[in-house]
Image (cartoon, rainbow, N blue to C red; front, side, top):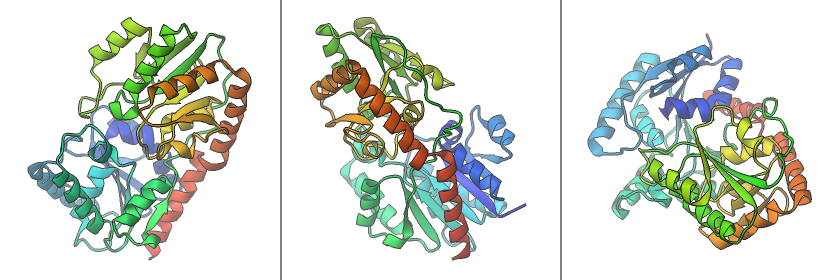
Length: 374
């Protein structure tokens, strides 16, 4: 077998939904891929890919001192047992704890992926300013560990990491994990009246409340538009909506909440365009998938979103938390088939040129190869 690569991820479902293309690229390049995560239902799927799963006992939603010490010890034991050449920590908690666990262990290169700043910095998390400052302090030191690279998904997050004092040469911009442009192909638009769709977790930081407000205002004015919401609530996220809230929205405003959808193509087959009112993203997978399926977009002009939702090219963009502006943009795109078709063609071309799983996989493997030789 080739060099061992160990992914450290909070949840098995997140690894399978967001990181599978890069792991497959590493496997195909000769790496022996291991996955350390909290395992619920994903063990068999991970093993079918030829990866080796390792169950972690941590909780995604907690960064308590006692829980963090326990997690670091668990990870350190795992690192010693597996002996990886590279540890790839994905998202804030694995970055903090995985990098800490690697300190002092020889011959381990570390890749840290910051997938957006998360609720700790931008959202509903009930944490003190002191906690945020402590996390920034820890990141500033851990991301400068020898033989490490920090991967971000957009220029705004790159600026954040530079602001922590991480050397420029240790920061790499890779646009997510990529989408399979062979599986996700352009789909014909459904018939009118137009339908907008949001795909993602039902979180305040994703702009779901703002989206509902905008949609309800259009309904009061008699604008013929339907809205699909595809995704689950997230009880471990403090900004998650409750199922009863979504059922109430469905009853009051005619929103159709689909819950989790296994084949996202079925959502885009029913939708004329995508909408995302997020406050901040790393790089939104939902918009990448929509673009691959040939869908125009309405999105906030927010970090991460603006990498794929380009004003006047692939999307109409609006300020964050601005329901009236969002409603106006949705109304405009719903009523202009030519504009939707132009945006859709541009979006598909952009995904093919910059965000395909094949292209992102090559960039990621090149990073792994380079860090092993430094």
